[in-house]
Image 1 (cartoon, rainbow, N blue to C red):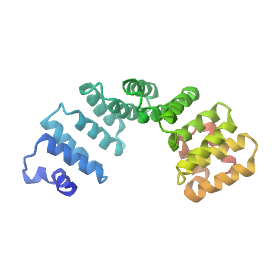
Image 2: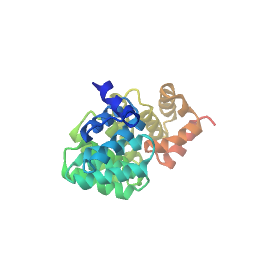
Image 3: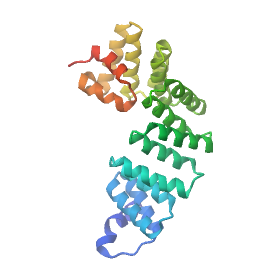
Image 4: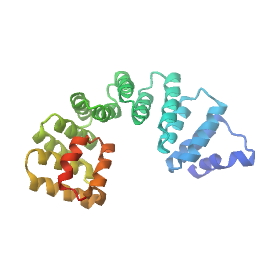
Length: 252
């Protein structure tokens, strides 16, 4: 079924097929499922040509554009979706994340707070808020958001990771180490909690533990053993101060 539906996304333009908006939407969803963002965007645009008031197609288009790195266009698509369906919390999460990726963290926070207001049980909203507050250098509300995420899902590794980063930025280094241990427990193949833990160990002047965590992260992702690789950690929520602290044990 996925293969047949995905074929619609590829073939209608040249073959002269007639499809409905719903069929085009399904084609876009199928293309997203198999990782083809380009064909997904084409299919969602066709769905919207046929029915511009289809909020799910605007959301799908936003996702497809985001996967292509076109975050400003993605944010515009998600804005259309929330205008058409203003009480759908997940739509505000998607809009907030797209806006965050354009660097507009304050506006992203406002949209994510709207999502949490609409659905206080929305785990994605609180996890996203935790991330965006870190990018906005607001560690205390980042901590509050991630603790709310953990109340909803006590085994959420992402929330523990963001919690650890926020605690470290507040100078609560031992608590940060403990939070990253929990993140590692639930996401054992993710090098970021190990690197974050190494940062906090260094602040505690526990260099052997920091080096052990750093080396363990390197076994998962070798690029983080170099200073050039460490600079990419800003994408994972690290501050420049945290990266600089970690760089003392990274290779040139």
